[in-house]
Image (tube, rainbow, N blue to C red; front, side, top):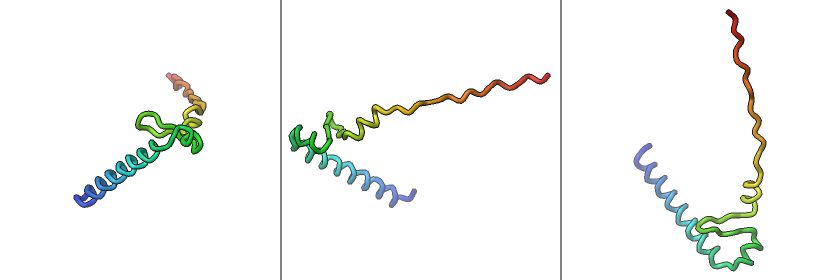
Amino acid sequence: MTLISLFAAAWNRYRAYRNNVRNLRELRTLTPAQLRDIGVRIEGERILSIHDELNAEYQPRKEAIIIPPPEDNR
């Protein structure tokens, strides 16, 4: 990476961080009832939506593929 692209990546990361902080401050001004109406819950510094909770409960079934040992052809 060039120095300019490193600087641009750092700047973009800083802007994303500042946007997250601003969004969290705006959501903290809402009451819990208003947050429930829009489907959002705040836990500490994390913003959780109903969609996040539904995905957390869904665990896809994991099936193992069993490979038989190679035959001994002596």
